[in-house]
Image 1 (cartoon, helix red, strand yellow):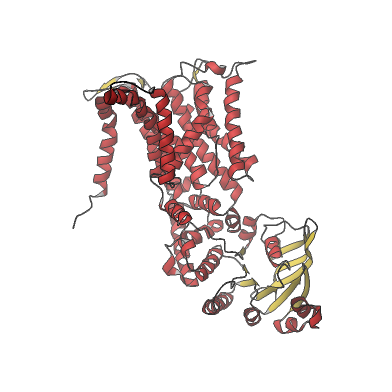
Image 2: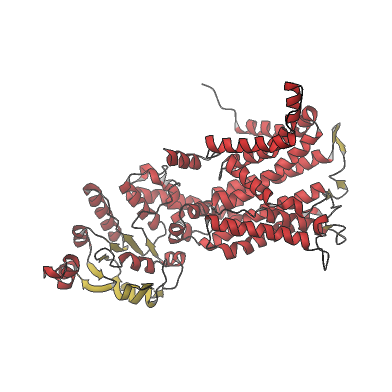
Length: 351
Length: 255
């Protein structure tokens, strides 16, 4: 009989792996991939946030990127030369997340009676409104600096420790990108933890009940209005948090980063990975962040294979990406790593 | 006997259709009260009005003296009126146990912070809910299905699960919308025993049912609806001999 390794051992191996990952990637694939790793963690946070709204409560939200934008702009306003404010990140991040949550409730309130396609259209409009506001709020008073965006945003700094500068520790050089990885990893783990605890709770069950049958949920004692608003607010909080981290990491934000395509991409991550299933959502976010980048190498592959680049990798990249999405939806409609719930749902629908 | 539920002068129209007109009735504490009538008589409409799914146009609904009309469904449930549905409405993709746990929602209170931090209060509340949910599954006789998805349960057991979910909210009045619909003979007799047991434990039941035999044997009093109007109320004996009731069921020619 094989004995399962004890839990602490599995956890230590996982922790060591995650800690060593940026260095392994740096050595094996180059620094630009470490940067992508940071971005992948950001998208994990975003996808887990949207998962609460779409995956648990079943509310199709196509304007999720608005909360990401709000978090990013709050960070930029309070920690950049734009208004001459330079508040520390630990004060600014929660503020951004809170403002996003407030807007989550503001978006949720008028849309409480809407479901499915109708809700999707309204939230899509909301996402666009926020982006267009950011694009145009440079006159008469310059708040967002318009399409030029806000530059020179403060990096994360703890006392004298500046996260964007290289540091030497234990004989290893930690560049800003490496340190950002650890910061983002910390927040990602926090968001995963919160998601897991919520899923298996009175609140999480109420969300799923609303998704399954809203009328029965109401007749079973669930205040559907409050719980839907709570889902919007929780999802928006994660979005706002990710926005603040993004602003500090990039040092520059503009409305361009928060377009509809971004919302759709995040939705794709959770649909592709497995809606309502935390490991699936994480997997989907990582795959969809890294896959488009990996496909940039199609030019090199063509040269290796045929000695000549026939199709411009920029064109081929999105084509292959689209084909991959279609293939997954055809052959694994419940997602790459579906929850047991969803897997059964789709099996029944087809059987 | 004391009145638990009082419905007075309730009316409801849908467009030009008068679904309920001036319906009044009274359900006493501890009894099994039947609501019968031909198809389309307004029985389910009355249920929906009672449980806050419809707002009434006129009239008053009181449970233990507390106004229920104009309240939201979750407030009605919290006030002590739980219900089941004619076309079973379980949370299909949740397990039987989870369905009953959702039924505990109104009687529990832990929020986001409690859930994320697993505060002691949340942990004991959750443990209590689970213990009660298991006990309820046991009570309605489907403990063996606790971990199965609601939609994979046999039909009769789905009806039982819906009753367990409603009971989880510790109601004083349980309203059952055609609980025996689609059940076979054995399932019906088991349901009958369950309802009598619930009554013995002090619960008051309000029952819509088509199976006349079941209703006559089970209910202490009945009300009959026809085209949204209450045409009779009383003991099964009296009601079954009422010429208006006979006419409603069999047509005027039968008289």
